[in-house]
Amino acid sequence: MTSTRFFAAVLGLALSPLAVAQTSTSPEPKLSAAECEVWARELGFARSVAEHDGDAFAGFIAEGAVFGAKRPNPRRGRDAVVAAWSGLVAGKELRLSWYPAMVAIGGEADVASSSGPALYEDLSPGTKQRFLLGAFQSIWHRDADGAWRVLFDDGIEPQPASEAEVAAFRAGRRESCSRG
Image (tube, rainbow, N blue to C red; front, side, top):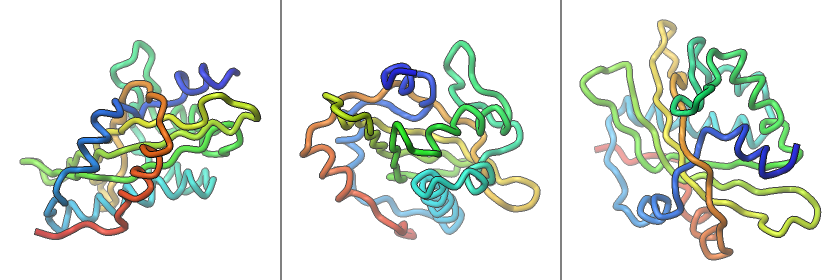
């Protein structure tokens, strides 16, 4: 599969670089304790991909998850999502990293939205555009066992990123959230 098709087929995570730029210059959000739990889960979810840990990755996905929900043929169910993402988790053709910039819980205490920037690195030898930058949005649900898991995940293809944008992405990562 070509890198371009790989990006399009696997990713349900990106918005536009403009959204990333806005996210990285926004004031630090003040979050509730529950929102900070989701923040930590989002970081753990990203770490499962960075560490190529398919079992950990699967543990972050809700049984009834839908990835690519706005697409004509979304991936439905944990098994389908895990299968579709297996190449991405393996990290041999494409390296994906992301982190939350905002988490919000509304009137339903068991549903949360998480969003932030995402960086895609094409590992193909001789690639002309090594980095692409986008953003993600995930909808999390607190399952009966108390763990937050991704229920919905979607976005559009990322856009080419400059070295300065890649550096800004890397500098913007925060390992903890600020409680309000």
